[in-house]
Amino acid sequence: MSTVLMYTSAYCPYCIRARRLFDAKGAAYEDIRVDEDASQRQKMMELSGCSSVPQIWIGSQHIGGCDELMALEGQHELDNLLLLNKAE
Image (cartoon, rainbow, N blue to C red; front, side, top):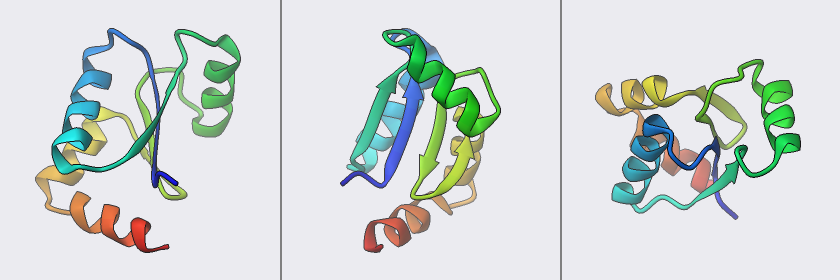
């Protein structure tokens, strides 16, 4: 089971950037496309309180969007968070 869950859309540059970072790290993620299913967008908004994509969770922790993800990477905290949640 993936420890990373992302709500995304196909052509969103921030979604693409987030996918590329997880791909580069070899991290498995579940990519739920809200542009293909309006009910998934509604679910994302209920869970996150946000309407923009991507919305990212690592384990049960809501990370936020691409900016927050890149901040974790810049602070060298993303790898540890991925490892901690993979162990659960």
